[in-house]
Length: 478
Image: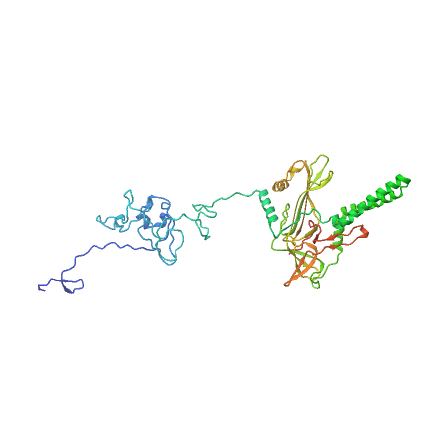
């Protein structure tokens, strides 16, 4: 086919004008495919491991952080994969690093700035943290420390809280000493406004039975009687008046001594004989006695020594016996008697379910309320110089309260009202917004004279709690 214009034939047999194009060398194509994370394991790396000579090394790649693929698709890591020694990012073709994929004319091109030593700076791109990214994106910046896989998301630097800068668990303190924890628990009860601290040694006092004016008047009459009886005996030698005064004085002294010794028994007898009221018919402001089952409120207590949980009232008292040359437990401790050395009594608000009506009432014994407890205490332990080392729990209890454990005869008593116990409460009914409460009376209530028992009248100024010994009592499950 003769023509002055050059032409050539295509592969399909068609003749076209022009000169044939010179074949161009094809540039290698870089593609990123979804590769599973192998952690440097040669068995899982396949051809990729052979390409980077992983068969010569063992273990993971040089302390590099783990990289997880995204849920949305393949993770895109910008830049080529570095070797196990360095983390330098080489942008451009890597055909020279793979044998058989290029010629000698292909060289590596290092893009980016140089540092002061003339080496290319390291660039970190792609998601570096161990988290899972919802979409392929590139993040630049320093690598954060590896966090432990706890699943807890917190705010602030990783050095705050219970972890150090390397992500490991930071040990703040070791196990607490039982005496320290006991001291912390005692301090928490003592400073909690919802807990009433009862410091009275006994609920009965002879001063509450006999007014002070009457006591001074009786004492003055006895002084006058003794003076008159002595004068008559010296003047006319007649001892009748003096004998009468002595007999009356002896009777009064015996009556007062009897009430001091058995006054608490008289009050508990009065409480037990007082009739139970029905809360359905009780009026607002009426003084009643309610007997029922106890239920804890928002803040249950725990006994000090035996660690009995879920209590509404706890009492732990330490007594010491004073001999002739022994130390006194307190300023009023007499010889050859038991004296109170330490006492811990606490009370909180609780609920009581009335046996008569089945109604539930809130008993206000917490928040500094006026409470007089009559709860029987049982002897927990008796300590003397011979067996004081046989009870490490008792010695730990003493250390927690900064009490000495020298050669003393001691006795520890403990009483409590546990949830499910049966108690009797005496107080005033108060109704407030459909809430039935029992509070302390505004005016004192007199028990009256108990002539058969030779008991003087006693004033009940506070809310009364009565519970028998709970050590062997069957507790109703609540």
